[in-house]
Length: 507
Picture 1 (cartoon, rainbow, N blue to C red):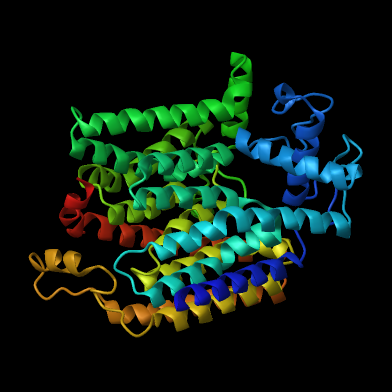
Picture 2: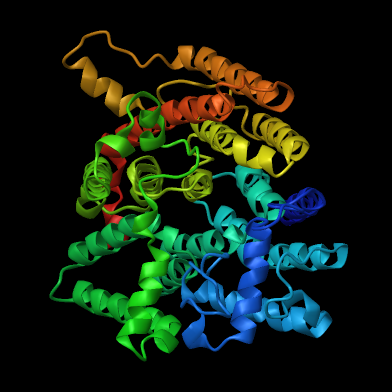
């Protein structure tokens, strides 16, 4: 009972921080003609309420796709329509066709902020609490600590409640899916995951680990008995969920094709903004967009992404376990972020969620990653005038994690989950040891570097000849961190022998 009292306080603190962040500016505030993501979400409400479904994704005189055209899956559109009904009831001017473009007022800001807050409270927050409460082989204190730090993760708070988006919905649905698998409710887990994809297509980052885990589980049960039955049930669930969400767009082939074309804008190129992935960082040294044709860029991107995530997916399929599943979620999402085509800087949130799931297992490295992920979005956050909110939430998160997990007390091979890897290397290199103690120094250097770049980005004007100096440096520093994290998480996956011992639980 005491833990539930503490968990309630934790949730209230998380909600308070969320609403405090929402008091700040938002994406594109007072910046015509396109404004920003705030206007994009408002405009989608305008379109879905005033136009028939068949026109939502098509260009027309009433739906200019160049002006924040709808480019998210159907479930997002239905959510926008629901919000639009409420907006029309309060003030029809907020979503009036054509005349509401760029609408800004304190009342409308309160409404829009409230829609994110309510979605967070209904979907993401309960998923976090229930997932942490169901953690196995974890003390009640650590369960509360995991929930506390996850709810205070600054990246999601700043993007959803500051910048303005609804990532809490798709990430929350994904977390419900993970929770379903953790409780051996594979059908419910698959349903939640399908809904996540139908809300935001980038949730495909998590699709391969789900598929590999469930396929491996079916193979272990045998495809002539319980395994076959489970496979049929899973396929039926996935097909039914997608069919239900896409039903209005299946009336004509042209409708379906147009929605898919809007969801995957290949024509936009390999990358656009200063995102901390491999291609944007490489472009600093080698102008890859000028050297390679768009089609060749796409092929290189696909090949590198596929190769980087293949080992972890094979391991998970052959040795399905919940522990392996969690780490493979991290690895695959990070591979997609680093190497896939047309990645947005906000996509790092899809890596951060699975990292939060292993926060209690490798707290030192998880906290380090979550801090870097927030830092990687610094140029975007500064553009939205969220400097104070970014610094404040990041410091609060750091203090909460340091106090909850004592991350600096035990940084050893065992704590880092690298003992198996170290023993394997010692067979070929006697005396080899993972430089665990040096990681504290590297961590401090990393924090100092990110703090310095943050300070310079806020206070110093870049040289006229190098106007993008600080965003590029943020990109390079973050990308280097992410590449090292990718190697680290893959080492844990490939050298984890506990996966094999957990097979009895699956059967």
